[in-house]
Length: 420
Image (spheres, rainbow, N blue to C red):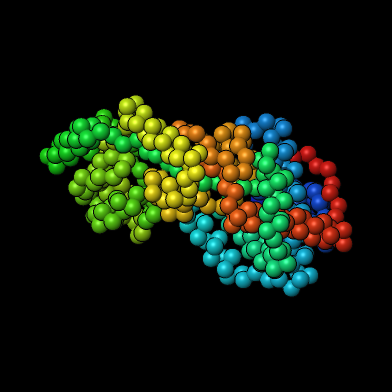
């Protein structure tokens, strides 16, 4: 599709006159030109709507400063993307179009499964977007991500990190937080007492008996369920797919037929009773009643004492990784010695840990930090493998910026001031 045709379609969509029906009028604004590619104001506005949709923000509540900042960020990202495409073409790097399409379709399916078809369409409408526009946004993101990945793989072959480089990095950031870091944690969960657990099970069994005797599931959920997101809706959690339920619940849920009620299901969160209302292919619509196993203050105090005991052991020289493997209640990270996936920047830290981490340095381990899940010992990793990955990633970022800056010098780039 040519840019001219795209501009005519924008005009039709917005109800503006087109050359066939009126005198030629400006139907869109060019805000930047990169080589022979133009960036339109409407394209930036569409991306702004998409970004706000993903963040769950209402565009009507944006301050002028936030709106202008988001506009400039998206504009610069689009310019960088055009430079990336130009450089990839120069280096004969191509992306498998079918791979991009498969990834885009998967992301759309995930969003529809998460929200449900009707709510998904309502969300698009509230942001002034069409599904076609959202698909194109995902498609562009996937294409850019794959190009960056391929270019990074090529460039990483030229980035070597020595032991001296790692030592120099340690020395440089011994008194300040580095711009990129690996983070680990140990979670100590408060455990409810046996008496409390027995009482919760008794209440859950009594509710299940009332359901079996014919009482209304939805009304019992409203009155007694501890599940905060669904209780007010009579336990209705909407349509969900596999992977959306706790692993302990999933097989039971997908074995039920519409109208059937599960046996009592015990999890770390509490006791669940589930009714399936509707089956739609690979999705089920279910209602749940949860009688939670919420630990009391005494249980939380015992968990804190256990966390402090581990903290003191670490201060005395015990290995954080081994303690995480043996004691952390966060199973996904415990098997990795407490390591959280990915690398983190000071502006993008795990929720709940951000303020604590900003006061730490490489190798530091925090005293117990409380969250809704329990008590955490948090570490800014300083092991050789992590620091080698950090140094390499930072060098790749620098090299990538230099590469795009070099490309920018070769191409015609014209940015035109336009109000967002």
